[in-house]
Image (cartoon, rainbow, N blue to C red; front, side):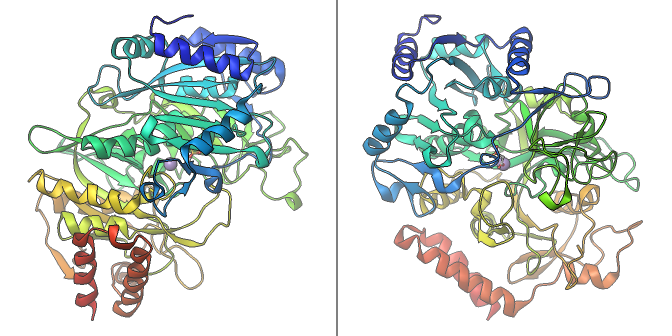
Length: 580
Ligand code: SAT
Ligand code: MN
């Protein structure tokens, strides 16, 4: 027993008995311990050493080929009542789910080490931080949790002081997709995940705790747990604004959070606070303040290069775990659009043959400490977080949605978030490129009924006069030939500038049925090779197409029945009538 907290030692003892683990290891969170995890995995072949001259302390992990993404169809929210989980979640009765999971966990750690990982989500000592303990039989998970969270003794000390922690139980099991479930019990603050070793399914601090369970807690306690990056934009005069932006997985959150100002923007700086999750609370002045509960980055590798994301490229040159990338003859990691080197071995360890598909898996990932990033902001450690000037929603849409627009007010902004949609990506198993509704980019991550979630968002309206403004962006508009209309990446700073100018009341805007749009010329395109007509196209609203969109949104809301807040329906009605 390595804790004086009885509820924790009893839980661990009970799980060790159930799973028949051979050993129990309490993680302390030191670098030495991490190095030991790495040595063990190298010895077992769970990790491969990469070229240590070009990639010092970097390793490659190859997943089971059937275990490379989140599995939304096997992810459940088990609340007492089905309506509380809502149509946005798969649901199972808690008792039934527990029985099923206990059956799977029975004896599953025979001959394996059970790791106990106490962790803190958020800066240690922050009033906004929350704690959890993950039990896992995966050394890969323990090593990744070291990079992704504040884990070990300091977290344990705080858990022992308060007695409060989320319980997360994980086993890779047999990695059999037929015996795989990710179960959440928000009412008991418990997570049970079996049969997958992949990121979002297995690193329980991330999506399972910091989004699904935390969103449920946030609603009862009056705050927000969101799928948002947090970025600071500093102008040449030294004035910094913080933005929190929600985009679905693989829509460029990491790129925007680490943006490097283009050459045309000398004197501008961008600071990264988080690339995936924001926890936001109202402060005494009614401002929304955000912390990043995570301490590391779990980013998509393909597409990362010196031009698209130099900070990410730099971050993964040392102390990184790569998952499912390809290898070059020099034993360097390789991925599509790396812009240097050639693959000789694919992500499955086969000699590279284009006939087998991409060399790196489209959802291959890197794990690194957030501090590796050259644009890392020290304020990511600030206990009170940073004040948010603007909230930005977005998605990947070839058509329809303009480059940027602003909601009229908070309630309209909630509608804008609630009606976001995006093309599906390789981050989850299933078809890629299909447009689906993804309210607030939380479709896979909201731990309760979306209708109640929208009510919770709306409730902030009456609690503060100093709320951030709300915007929507779309970097992914294409012309009929499929080429992107907007250059994206670093040039997105031009759009962030307009957003900040709006927050400071420094620019006017054009009113449209869907919200405020930039006046012609308001987005600085100097030095950009972009036609005036293209900008017009990017900033136009097609009333007919929008009418159809709003009608389909009305149908979508119907699936949530009369739980949809009246206020949201009213906002929807206003937009529809403005379009008629
Ligand atoms: O695998 S994760 O869920 O951690 C990454 C993502 O899909 O956003
Ligand atoms: Mn994400």
